[in-house]
Length: 357
Ligand code: UT7
Image (cartoon, rainbow, N blue to C red; front, side, top):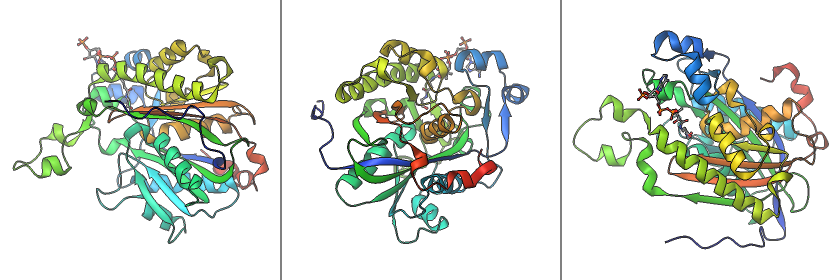
């Protein structure tokens, strides 16, 4: 059975979530393909040809998702020029602990005590689901300003001896601030497409650690305790689901693929992004390719790519941006926005100067 079809008229008139700040943080340690090929049965040539990835960042022992999220959140708040928010959302697959959520801790460490704070769990689509959640909270008048952080420490769940996954994933965090504003102002998010297919649960999973395994009477194996992905199947789903979701969001926004100035797809594999772009009819040079430097950073991949595009001058005010996520669940989602003029926000970004990654 399929869901209720989306309202073709798009978001209701009234309050809209407006992007007013962006930031990212990567742990300093870089793991190159050359380093990986010294300890795994792989090569730089295999990794770059099959994925496009040249490097990824990794936390130091003892660093957790909240440590990255706090840094990214601080930078996004600074970029928005106004440190106050009333809601903090953290999209992650690697919370500091199974319980409680990571968002309240992140909020407290940012000095945002007593705000609403919870995690969004949609694997690599978590950031897009988080945008939709923030949009709903703002539209309903529950929240005025939301800090949404996508943060993941995949090095904590990927088996370092698993050559298929160890070469793909990296650690990092990206964040945006959303404020209540008008539907037609630059930065307003609109025209979401979200979906899932739980029949694909087993193609991306950590089998152990949840109630299914804990309720059984045997301890988990090493394999069950780590992140597992059936790469080829995921690849196929990623291409078709991302293209269909992006098309749905574009159609409901009334945009043609040629209108898109910057396509920020989930940074999993350059070949996937290029196939999706080709399928949609978006020029390949309009695709974000931040993964070349940072790998697949899970829920952080879209906000990190946005922050990178913004800080390197690839995103000018008014640019039409398409965001598309895909990940475990299976889950997928897209939304569109016109890039805002962040210099119009009370600007803390410049004060940050060389501190930025
Ligand atoms: O973030 C969630 C979404 N994730 C994704 O979208 C990831 C989607 N999947 C992929 O990006 C790709 O499927 C991978 C990068 C994971 C794998 O690339 P592939 O082109 O699908 O390779 P494959 O799994 O078909 O493997 C081809 C060969 C195999 O050897 P045989 O059976 O042909 O002899 C693998 O054993 O490459 C081998 N292989 C490797 N060789 C060198 C697998 N991993 C490696 C490696 N280095 N790291």
